[in-house]
Image (cartoon, rainbow, N blue to C red; front, side, top):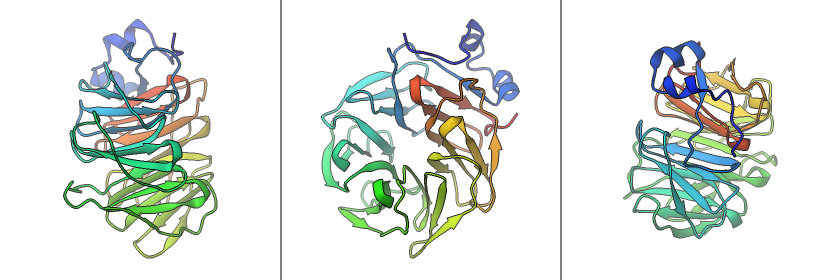
Length: 272
């Protein structure tokens, strides 16, 4: 059985209760349609109900159409997957093993090869990106940051640290995280930012000002000023399991996933 966090009968009773989430901020869900102990690697939602989870455990991508209550399994020829970003319910990008980057035009049923960047750990496309004119970004090992169009362009970041999280709410406004560092890219230069205490695995911005970062020991950081300062948020996981990815649909609705199948959810931006 998959190990779970704080899962009781009351978790199911109050799963869709705003009062429960407003009381606890983040809370844990445990969908029975994902069996076993799974290490999740990424997630992306195109609306409140429709989303995808990737895993470094199996050659699988899991899709939900009911807000993470149940999931269906999509098998993939990619091997394990490290990252996914969907432009809409049909068009998106994913990648992982071998640094390969693929795209889909049918919701993940099939994937088409674009190129390879060595070690791929995260993908991000600005809000409003259309399938006809995609401009996105990817990051990975040895400080790699790449631009994705019809091919791949190395942006030559100043870091040699593994960069495992990237978020681009708009073109030329890009944040990347890895180790204990967060960098901001303005389309020309990279600048190092002040960070909360911790080691970071992922970062997600909903606009050019507000974002979240997650990492080892279950750390969750939140900024409302473009990363100039960060506040740490409370994680209910008493085991302090490492969080691998975070995603917010808006300023209130967010999810974070990590090792041993931990899934956190908030409907108030992570604050009590």
